[in-house]
Length: 182
Ligand SMILES: [Zn+2]
Picture (cartoon, rainbow, N blue to C red):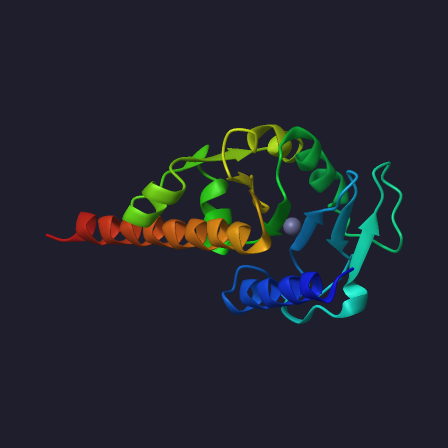
């Protein structure tokens, strides 16, 4: 593994944690390797402080060299269904709450509309198929899966999604307040 690649994992993981997009030991990230393998964070890794031993290579046939994330199967499915270069799974909290009560997250803010459009809410086994059509989806009640050309791009989709979800949440709060006004 190149040092540059590790530094990208470390920097993006720290931003996911600092932005509150994952809990201390939650979420995972991977990059596609030449020859259809992948490099993924190990199970139990803390994305806010990824060390050099926290990245596990997984061969094209699924054989890991270490203890990869328990989510490795979903990442492999995304790479075989799409041309994604990376996958990020995070736990954006407003988006998770909305995913429990809606079948799609519809951004109301300008950036969310421009960057994402409608974000589907799907069951875990439908994530890879859904990512053929859109750059980010929500697994219902669980979290987001974003694909990208590099980790920075998938971080962007994740960050924009949670911002849009929080705006939707705030709008509902405002609407609720107005309903109660005389
Ligand atoms: Zn998760």
